[in-house]
Length: 225
Image (cartoon, rainbow, N blue to C red; front, side, top):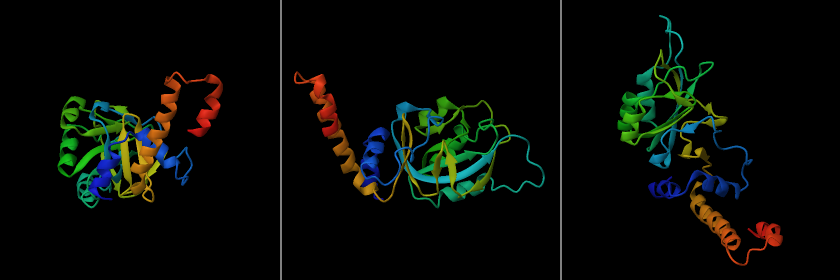
């Protein structure tokens, strides 16, 4: 993906891109996006586009002497193997999840310095005021006051976040509506497809708002558009 393409994708909101993906008929319409358990914490930051670097965490219970998880340093190294801009995607393995947060001012600062633009997690996040000022995106299940015993268990495998399977290197687009995975086979064609979606919708809306609007023709006009 070129920088120009990433910038072009960032011009559109997630619903428009989701509609554009549908026009290629390459996947079911009920897949390819995270459900609304994954919420945008900072809608005012706008859109996030980046490549996924994946990991899993746990936060409940102190690790024993035999704990052999990957650890933070391995995750720092791994994200640098993913093309920039990077999005850290973290699966919380606790049941229930979101007891303790990996994400706050410290990690937002560290991962920002490593070329990451935000995180997507079904766990929790904290230090909202400080992280918002950095412009670092948080997409998460909600806030937490504590990091508890959070630790990185694994890195680099596929994870499922809000019913969306994400693998390392997947291209993600996210905004106030949620998180969308961009299918690579149509990525280059999406901006043009999104423009067509917008024009089709606007043509219908112009008619609805005009003096020519006729409720009896609504089904006909919807079929055309």
